[in-house]
Length: 277
Image (cartoon, rainbow, N blue to C red; front, top):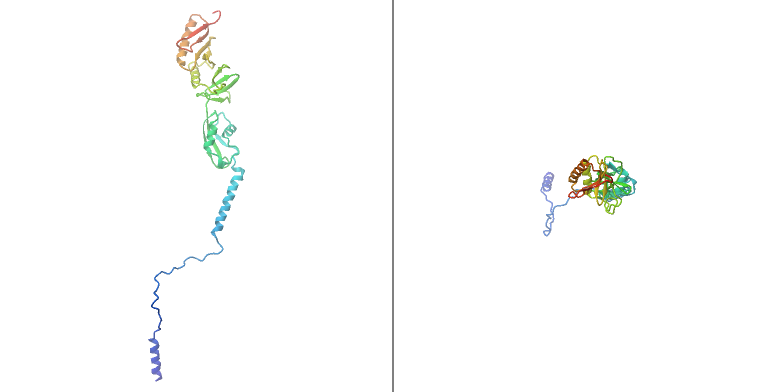
């Protein structure tokens, strides 16, 4: 009997169910459950400190840039010099003691072009030690203009430059002290036509190394025979030289010693005789 009761109890335990009380008004949620995959935060680290450190470093760099003498222009590197000096170019650039951040290459170039001796310039800004690099193209003198005891260079465009070295190869034009035009006058420039005319005289008559200039008679020179020749302004120089040579040859053939031969107006040339000839 005992064995029979034990088997019955085991069967009841094997087939038993646990009852669960459910409320029919509660529906199961269909929303997914959010899982937190993030790693636990380290309470000792903050990006705000990183940002603050970057700001401090950048501020120190800016302070260094603006307070360090390394970034202030004390000298320049210059190329292309022929007559000018490095110190003159530095003075024309007008950037002495300027901070490199404020150096404008275009403004420096414009400053350099104010010099009558500089035709063009290229400016480049880099880092220390030579922060400003300048390459200049200087104007070439075409002749020397002498007036009132002073001498200057003149280029083919009539621009005036300081005479920096002795150039024996250049044609010399000695002007009257009362010339109303030219480098010593209010105009401060020689007519390009006059410059080209003078150079053409030298080309046609290579023995002529000095010319005179007077407002009324223009360009002139002393002939090897001892008389003065006047050719006027720079127009029609080749024609005037040809006329002068023809007149001089005729006068010499006739045994006449002229004092002056004037072909400033090629249509009405004339000559004067020396006294006693």
